[in-house]
Length: 461
Ligand code: FAD
Image (cartoon, rainbow, N blue to C red; front, top):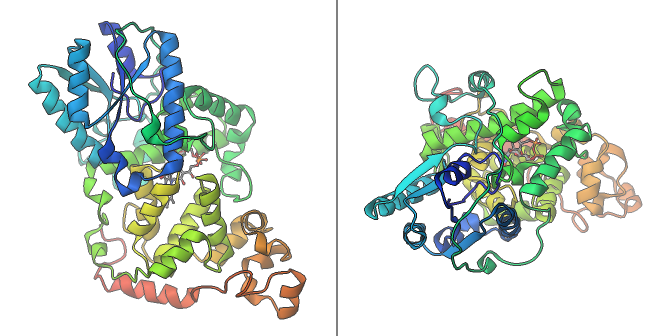
């Protein structure tokens, strides 16, 4: 059993299939090629992964077989370990990313040359792309019809963790992934506890109302667990009470799991989106890509408090609220005129939940270059977003302490403070907190001109 993004033992079709067939060796491959990629130079996420693997090892040992760690190219390591173990078959869970699919194809070829079968299973998504092909047979480009078809899918019965037996093979250390404690507890047991706590606390029932309030902990924070398969969509669906009647809040939350499946299907069907805009005209946008602007954005020093709060939350927690992700991403693309792929890369390196499918989907949605049904000329106004989703300024006060004493929602427009008010709030503009880096209204006109210049009509496929 070759583990990748499926670090759990229950509701694991591949592991269960392997266990029913005989002795099992559980393998994790440290792939230096992946670790060397810029997107994956993400110390916080690697720490979380490392702790998750240690926890998985503990659970596997209790079931009867430890996790074997090996380093090298998977197309060398997997066949080598299979031969060492005398295995006739290698089990794994399906991938969707272009990098992962290319790697799996190389491994399949190497195994086949050694006379070993590779078998791939579902379980990471509620539905596989092949199950939801739509009337065109090519899948869906728009979320709403996808969600209708997805909602009709049966939620699989949960599979219990299997008992395991198998040979003991030498194993290496996980040190290449870094050291130290992750920001949140990792592993399948921690994921189970987080799912239970989210539902038992009533937050799942309140989700529909609370999910957009930036200062509240209204969302589940399950993303890093889902990212590494420490829990599965089916486990979450069953915990929510599906199939069956559930509250509107729980249903709104379940719809987010649908977005995850949507973007994963999308990446599998359109692998080119990992490198370029889905909509061809938007591959021609002229970006400014000013590095000083990019740096100020990344550090949370743009002079737009809501943007700076989001970026500082990301730096401090390795997580950012979804509303803040939309606001900060929109600001980078549409106010700073920086290529969305630069922002995608910053997020990938900082997010605990950094995920090729969801991150790319979120960035292309925000840039208006991907699957979003809304036209590209929707440009978020950061100040209006702040006034709506952080009305009392609590979120900004938490993450931008220089502005802590600015009263009420004036915190969202510090550039309007008089000298007297700045003195009262102990915050001098351009000294303690930056002036706005750009004029939003002017940049809005400019970016729309750049999008128009590509020749794309709003709503073009
Ligand atoms: P909840 O609101 O509790 O949602 C539950 C789960 O549903 C999430 O854990 C996640 O798995 C899934 N989900 C929720 N919203 C989305 C969405 N819009 N798209 C896809 N799946 C979703 N999510 C990631 O998991 N990894 C990323 O790298 C990532 N990058 C993003 C980049 C941008 C620019 C944007 C706008 C969104 C991004 N998202 C990403 C989606 C979303 O912001 C996070 O999944 C969510 O904030 C995670 O917090 P949560 O677990 O509390 O979410």
